Length: 90
Image (cartoon, rainbow, N blue to C red; front, side, top):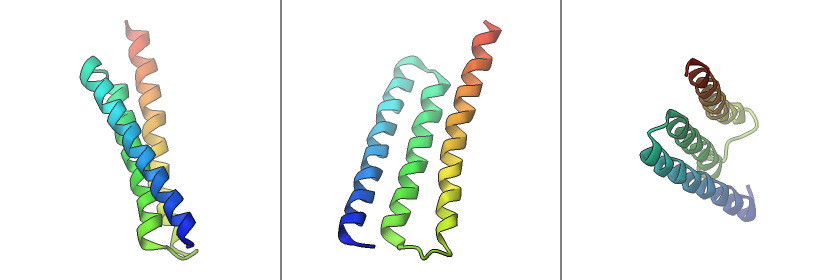
């Protein structure tokens, strides 16, 4: 991995971490599970970006990082479904 690609991957990870901190603040203000799950998802996505930067996986090992990203996006989908179900009960 080139130095620029590593730098950009680190910048993406920092962006995910900052977004997660914003969602955590919104969760503290509203106590809505949607924001807590979004914060967790952002941190999972940040960890996948950091794994690419730190471990420089070969093409054969890169699919494990995509599984981590799948967990992050799965958390986002689960948060939206949970929010829509709780809105119908009211």
